[in-house]
Length: 265
View 1: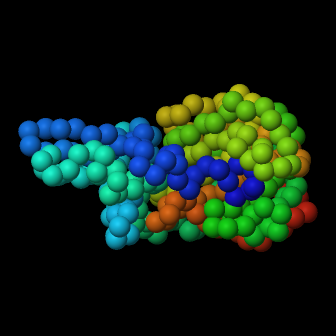
View 2 (view 1 turned 180 degrees about the horizontal axis):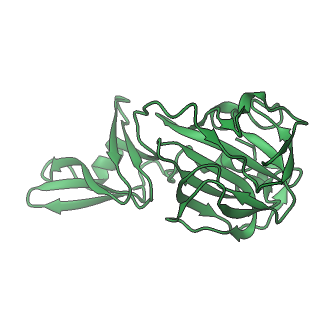
């Protein structure tokens, strides 16, 4: 992921920094003689819960659909309490459905800018500057001026909008200040648009959008050296989202290199 944004979005969607702290998507309910571990998905897309036994490392997955609430574990209350459950298990929440099935590898995405717009590719797949690791390797950076319109590359649902920041810099301290919008697509993939202008969103969480629909304004936020749009498409994996190669305007993304000039038709 471009070491500016994406970077911090999501491999683990929720914070679990304190070893035995209850994650925000987990609650406990005592009913009759049982204690139930309940997970509530507040997102407008599927969410899967990864439950790891801290002692044995055995892992199980529980799937929740958008806005679904479900019991994921149950125990007799005479044998355990909430603290002992948190001590025994680690709970992690990730975007999407897992195990992941094949996505539409031949789907043609539209370029993320408006018709007639011309843009320079400033970093392609596996770029030496910041497109490294599974989350960022298959991402693209497009030169865009602050305030230029960004469009959805594919039909989807807005699942995340982070747009409050107005800071930019070239050190790691600025990594988490890259504004972004994330969409969920019909084949269980996600797309992300990063470094947006402060309050430059043209859509809200929960909105359904169409390809070529304006969704935001380009900016200069986060960890970056120049104004640009960082764009990537992702699939769910056992450890979070990973970037995948796509076709943009009939051009395989892997063919796009630094210095290429693209014009939206």
